[in-house]
Length: 364
Image (cartoon, rainbow, N blue to C red):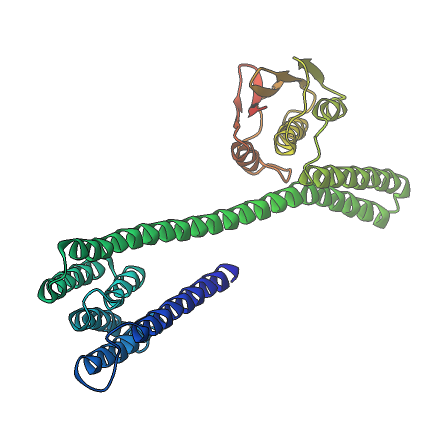
C-alpha cells in the first residue's frame, strides 16, 4: 500500500511538472515574434499552439483509453513539426521533445522508438524546409535521440527498482512464514511433549484412585507435578531462545545427562539461539528414545566445539535404537533433521556397531 501511494505521488508530480513546462513554453511563444494571431502566420502559430497544447495535455494526463496514447503523442510531435515550419528557431520543437519523453515513460520500447524516429525525421524535414542552419538540425534531432536514450535508462532503472521491491516483499513474506514455522515447531516440541506425558500420568493416577490405591496414585501425581514443572522450564527456555537469547548449551546438557556419560571437548563459546536449541533438542530426543527403546543401556553424550562447527553425538551401547518414525516424543527425527538443516547444519541417526547413534553438526 505504501509503495502504491508513493508511485501515485511520483506520477502526479511528473504530470504537474509536464503541465508547468507546457505553460512556460506557451507563454514564451506568445512573447516571441512573430506572435500568434488571427491572420497569416500568426494564425498558423495559434492553431499549432492550441492543437499542440491539447495533445500535450491529453498525453500527459492520459485521457481516454490506453490505446489512444500513441496517437496523442504523435499529435504533439506533428504540432512541433507545424510550429517549426511556422516559426523556425522558435520553441515549437519542444512539443516533439515532450512527445518523446512521455512515449518513453508510457509506451512499449518498440512503439516509443518508432515514434521517436518519426519525430526526429519530421523535425529534420521541418528545419530543412525552413532553411535552418545545419547546427540547429543536428541539435534538435540529437536532443530527441538523447531524450529517448535517457528515457529508456530511467525505464530500466524503475523496472529494476520495482523488481527489487517485489523481491524484498517476497523475502519478507518468506521470512514471516519461516518465523511462523519456527514458533509452531517450538510450541509443538515443548507443549505437545510435556502435555502428552502429563496427561498420561494423570490418567494413570485416576485409574489407581478408582481401585483405591491412593498411595500409588500419590506417587504418580507427584511425578506429574515434576513433569509440569519441567514443562514450564522447557517453555521458558523456548521463549528465551525465540527472543534470541544465547542458549547455555553445556549447562543444559549436563542437567540433561545426569544419568549418562557426558564429555565436553573444545572451548565453549556463545552460539545462536537456533543452533543451541537444535543441539539441545537433538540430545533430548535421543535420550528420551534410548530410555524408551533401550532401557538400561549405557549412553555416551559428546559435545565438541571445533573451529567452524559444533558437533553433538549421542551413542547408546545395547539394543538397536528406535525406528525413524512413530517416536514417542513430540520432536521426532524428521523434525530434528529439519530443524538442523534450517539452521545450516546436518542431522544423522541410525544403527551403530553396538547400538544407536545420533550425530548432529551445526555451524558455530
